[in-house]
Length: 411
Image 1 (cartoon, rainbow, N blue to C red):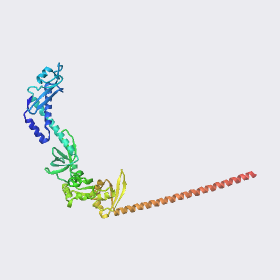
Image 2: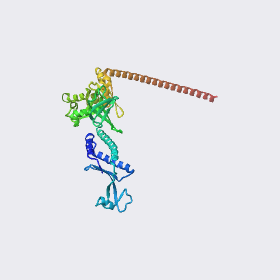
Image 3: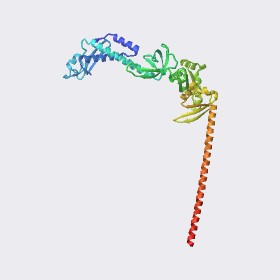
Image 4: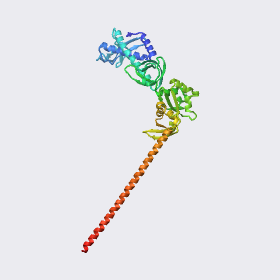
C-alpha cells in the first residue's frame, strides 16, 4: 500500500466547493490511474481482475488482483490454491474470491505521474459535463451575467461557471456594453465542444420581454393573464399581445400596474425601449385593429384567411396613415409579426381613389362586353341573312330545272 496522507482529501473538498466536482470523481480517477500505471509497469495490457482500492481511514492506496480459490492452480494470474488463500483469510473456501495486493515496490513515483495526468483530464471532463448539464437546463431561460470584455464585436459575458458569447446580431443596436456591468441575457443555445461547452446568449431576443413580464406581473406567473404573442425590434419597440383567463381581471391593466409601475420597471430594464401592450382577440379584425394601435382604424377587410395566406386590407384616416405605418414601416411590420397577418394599409383618400379606378375599369369592361355582344349579334344576323339568300337561290334553281324537264317531255 502507498501512503498518500490527507492532502488528497483536502484537495477533493476544495474542488467540490469551487467547481462542484465530487470527491467520488477524484477518487475514481486516482484508482483508474493506479490500474493504468500498474498495467504499464507489468507490461500487461488486459487485466480485468486488477483494481485499485483506497482506504480513506488510513489514507493508503494499493493495487489488488482478484483470484478464484481452486484445488489445483492452472492460471496463476486468475487462480490461487486453497492453502495459499487460507494464509490471507482463514474463513475462505473453494470457489470463493480473494483480493491479493500486488502493488510493486517503489511504485509511488510512477503512479503519481500517471495519476496527475489522469486526474487532470478527469477533472476537465467532469467540469465540462457539469457546465453542459447546468446550461442545458438553462437553455431558453433568462439569466444574469457580468460583461467581461468585447472581442471581435462579440461581447463575452460571465454567467457563472463559464463565459458566454453574445454575437453582434444578438446585441441591441447602439447599446454600449461596458466591462463590469451586470446584464440580463437569454440563453439561446449550448454547443458541445472539446473543451468547455460554448454558451450563446442574446440581449435582443423577444423572450427576454416575456421573462421580464413574468417577473414583474404576478398575474402572468399565476396563469391568470396569458401572453399570446410578442414582436420585438430590440432597442426600438416591442408589441406584446395579452389576454385574461379571468373576466374580472384586465389583462392590459395588470401588465401596466398601478400608475404604470410595472411597465416602467420593464422599460427601464430594456433601456427605455417602447412597449405597446395589445389586447388579444380571436376575432382577426379586432386583433388587427388592436395591433395597429395607437393609430385609429376606419375599416378592416379580410382578403384571404386560409392555411396558405392571411391577408387584410386596412383603411385609416388621412392624418393617421404615417402613424399606422410607423417610422420606416415599423408599426405595421411589428403588427404583422404579432398577428401573423399580412396587412396592407391605405388612407381614406387612397382607398377612395382605388375604388374610383376600380369602378372605371369595371365600366370599361362592361362597355367592352356590351360592344362584344353587339358585334356577336350583328354577326349572327348577317349569317342568318346569308343563309336565307342561299335558300332562295336554291329554290330558284330548283324551279328552273323543273321547267326544263317539262319542256323536254312535251317535245
